[in-house]
Length: 122
Image 1 (cartoon, rainbow, N blue to C red):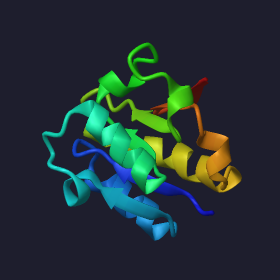
Image 2 (tube, helix red, strand yellow):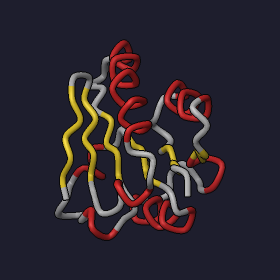
Image 3 (cartoon, helix red, strand yellow):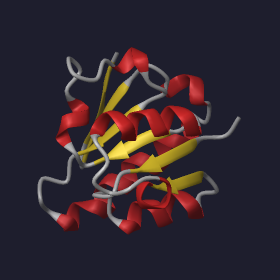
Image 4 (tube, rainbow, N blue to C red):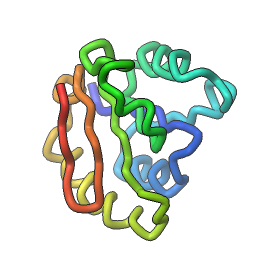
């Protein structure tokens, strides 16, 4: 099975477009849930879609509230209110996804995506 993603409402369209261009199946939150849906509903929808959640919402990076083992993968993008960092993050993320093309690699993990590195928490 190829990689699938659910992009939270706060994720810039550039991420959605970049993932689509790479051939991944990508859902926008606003297409499947109201944008004001509670975090728990967003994660439920990601599970239902069998998708990795991508968000800028720091709440999803809280491993105590959202233990990674319960989900198919959470990617927390760290833009630090700097839109110009989008291209730096995508330059690291796209090759990483190509090197790790199986959903099983992401299952049960939190990926904190920063401009200069990707940190993984299990």
